[in-house]
Image (tube, rainbow over all chains, first blue to last red; front, side, top):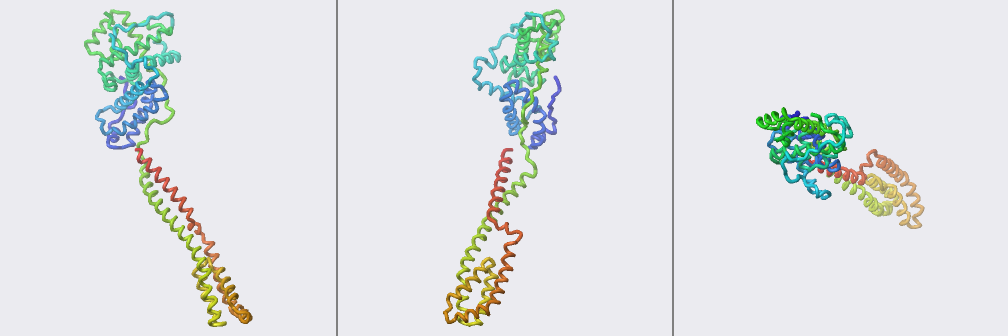
Length: 197
Length: 225
């Protein structure tokens, strides 16, 4: 797991817990960008700013009741919950469930390459490929997207993601796998061939 | 059977020791699963390589307040009260001089009229001190008072006394002129006072509103934290 980019120092966290507003602002400033990145990919840019700002204000007001050790994971939990709540309240795409009925992860289909193209491993710098990845992320169920982003972008461990999303580790494992596979299948369907291994 | 469902967890090092060893043993012998694993790894890297979106504004709520804000609110509170008091005081001050001057226009007249009749030429000389006294006590009124003294005295005098009155005017002239001079010396001094604008009620009213607005704004800022 990658180190916490916005790791809260214990001293700052203690000061913030004791009501030091400047210490809290420093903590929030360290994770502002990652929080916005997560919220923007969950919700889109329009709502992400409001969700992050509200979540940070809520975190400040309830900081005294925070008993964990990872301030970053705690605030990500608030943002993720608010983002999922907002998605549930949207009626624009009611046909898309947040998390479709569970099925055996081994039986999830793997799309096969239909045309020759670059290997997935060569696409990291391809702007078009990144655009396709963003589109693919927007199409997968929100719970899968949240787990996948928390893992691949923010670098949280499965145990942390389970806490953040209030689910079991088995569910987290399933969501990450299925979300990642869905993105891979979209890329394959756009003409890229899979890795040769 | 291919352990496809465990490949992501294997990639993320999230399997138990036994499960990881089992998947590793399978990968050593299965090219399909190695390809699938490579696909998932490449997909994860693509997701991690997505560009970082930037918010259009700061999203950190300003929960801290500058240390000087609370004292400033206290100052604004007292300043608002003081400005309101000074507004009322200056309004009263600016109102009553007019009332005093209107009263003064009639009050000294009997003195001016009766004094010459009672004491003759000497009375006129005695009248001038009363005019002087009034002029000193009400600096804004003296010119009117002196003028009314003379006009009322002339109107009340009989025609036979006209010559005497002229004489009185002449004899009283220097004294009246002296009173006028003193009045002139006092009146311009009051008008040209450098801080006369402080007596304007509007000044204090505007200041009171400004301090009240400042107090309100600081109060909202403090309540929002």
